[in-house]
Amino acid sequence: MDLSYSPEYLAFRDEVRAFCAKHGPSAPKNGGGFNEEGKAWQRLLIEHGYAARTIPKEYGGYGAEPDVLKSRIIAEEFIAAGLPMGLSGQGISMLVPTLLEVGSEEQKQKYIRPTLHGDIIWCQGYSEPGAGSDLASLTTRATEDGDDFIVNGQKIWTSTAAQADMIFCLIRTEPDKPKHEGISYILFSMKTPGIEVRPLVTMTGRAEFNEVFFTDVRVPKSGVVAGRGLGWMVANATLKHERGMLGDPNQAGTRLKAIIELMQTEDVDGSRLMDNPALRDRLLKLQARVHAMEYHGLRLLTASIKGEDPGVARLIVKLMGCEINHQLAAFAIDALGELGMLYNGSPHLRNFGNWQSSYMFDLGLIIGGGTAQIQKNIISERGLGMPREPKLAKA
Image 1 (spheres, one colour):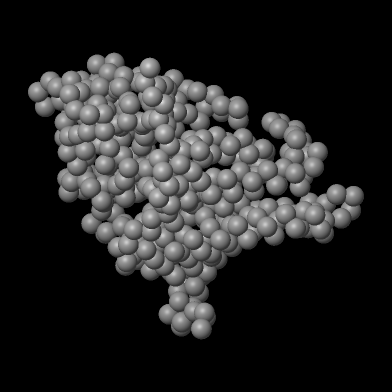
Image 2 (tube, rainbow, N blue to C red; image 1 turned 135 degrees about the vertical axis):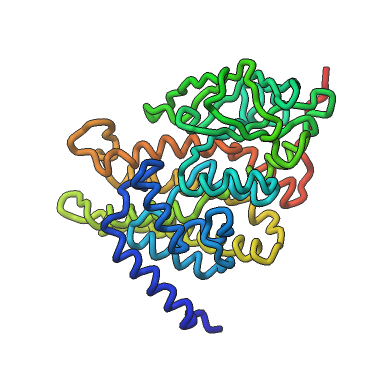
């Protein structure tokens, strides 16, 4: 078996490597974010086909045919160069592929291009105080008024709600139908009167999440995606992409590279961390898991290109990806020893405290986007065909 790259792919790697060498010095630090620097970097990546690579040109993407090896080469070279791979988030990574799958042509034309280019920031209105793991029990509701809905209710754990321009939101529009059939998936502006956002401060010390309250919010019916009462179907399409985003192997690869550099530059009692056999053994085990996730990602890409349902293979991404990211941050903290216990403002803090912050934030991601326990139930029931968890009998 010949596992070497063909001349076509070797030439493509040279092209990507040359881009990284040329533009790397001007790349935004720490990813850039949705500021002008970050958006300029995103436009440059799309122009060269390194972001939004397979999104059609008519919607603002690059328009290339799917190619598993080229996708892997791009990721490898950007990680090796320490460069950000463009903007991500609920809009780009979750809503855009959902609209491509089930959105109307008008919605695709209106939202995909500005979302890809960072001109629209989105948040996701799913969880509620009484509807988290049992999301279909949501009670945020809409009543009809001409061409609009009047929305009342509350969402919680809403990332980027304070910064978002738009929201894709699950709302009960058909109250007389069974709970899974009465939900619609609706797009509307976060600037609409009647929306209140309250920050939720987590153990990182930052407000990564928010509560969102809707009081008589007037929402156009034209924002419904796929059709009224089809929100549960659309929501599951989005959840598929959310789990892929949260378990992105490229993120784990970037983190692994940073840990290897840390172990090569930090020392204890005059010896590099990399020379400690116990730490090196733990690193190798984590490296093997990261590589396994990377190749698993290639497997999923291949299935997607072939139009195949990967089944249980797709279900494990979020579970394993979030756990690996948390374990990588934990290892970095352990490797730093007493320096790993520092937080907020110490002159001896390493990497601006990102390891400590990531450790706590990633612990939350093991819960968010579907808890690890829920993911295991889904894998066992839908992927492995095991019996469903029995429900308690009603008194």
